[in-house]
Image 1 (spheres, rainbow, N blue to C red):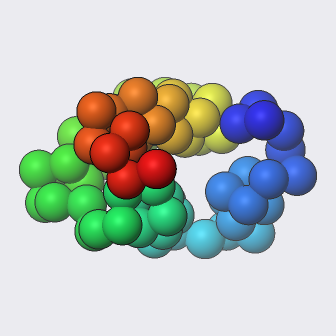
Image 2: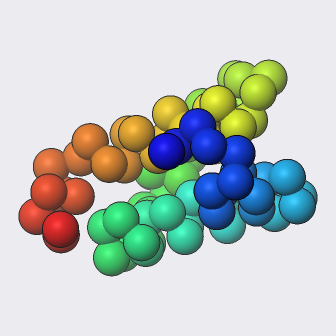
Length: 74
């Protein structure tokens, strides 16, 4: 489902939405909180290292969903 290009974050990336805005939205949806400054730096650095932002964003989604914190929210 994360690799489906018709999902929300892929559509937002294709529309030119700033990746930090998308990451904030992912955190709020998955963890019911904003990303910390340290988390945003990690994700921004990760995105900067990859040529395919879509694949990098999928990895970030997996990282968020695999957090123990996610299990307690849902």
